[in-house]
Amino acid sequence: MDAKAHELKSKIPETIIVKKERIKWMPYWFIAPSVLLIVAFLFYPMLNVFYYSLQNYNPGKPYYNGFAGFDNFVTVFTDDPLFLHSLGISLKWVTSEVVLQLFFGLLIALVLNQTFRFRSFFRTAAIIPWAISGVITATMWSFMFSEHIGLLNDILTKAHLLHSPVAWLGDTEWVFSSVVLAELWRGIPFFTITMLAALQTIPQELYESCTVDGGGRWKAFFHITLPFLKNSIILSTLLRAVWEFNNVDLIYALTNGGPADHTMTMTMYVANQAIVAQNFGYGSALTVVAFFILMLFAIVYLKISGFGKEDK
Image 1 (tube, one colour):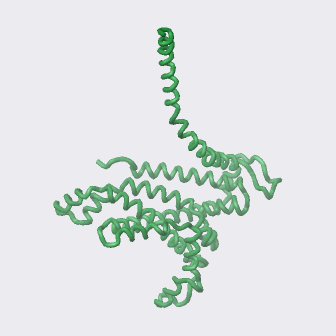
Image 2 (image 1 turned 30 degrees about the vertical axis):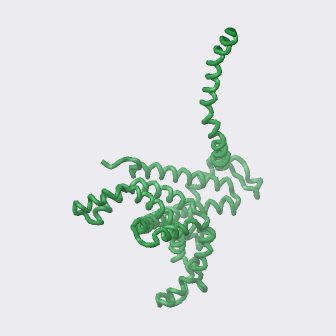
């Protein structure tokens, strides 16, 4: 009996050690499936793009295929005027969208943060454009902008603001503003939701103290509201800038980059090179360039804006 008890006692530490080892590795086993999915669907395609950027690869021109080294990148920066044109359109597009969406999104959030009847209904309604897919949004706005049956032309003509219908999506003077308006309608809810969530974290006691001290609404806005919204504004504008830079569905469905390349953003140019022309090597090189542009922008933007730093 004593021998068995001694034997059992001698095995207990070993059992505990084994269980501790299993517990130690258990968190890694839990996250392993997610890591595998990320590697399979994120990092592998990224590495594949870097690989193809160093190749001449076009399925329709097998004689053209082969290792190209950095020739594709040299062509991008030295012998492709459409690259600089599309980059300029992208910067103009991102700036217009982010600034306007932030302004109107914050304005609507401030209104929806007040107490009034049917507030829940209007908060829900504000999200609807964000929930609609880009293709459906483009279809709706294409009817709105139609030269002959469009609602916009009908309203402006009846209001005597137009003498004749305008081809909003076919006129180089108006096409960019028209597409910006369509994307603005879809993008405002993102800032509305983000700003509204941040507004609800601000202690009401601060506003009460400001009122007691004789401060008005503008003083409360600039000295209480904006400082509390700072990090939310920085992060949401960064995310939206990246998303708008990569926006392709709405522009593709409305104008396909035209007319005369007036809405040819860099992402549209990449899509045309890689998908339409099937020039995968050059399209991949453009994608790599866009990746580093966005990464550099994110680093510089976060550094300049002081994201995460508390105001002294």
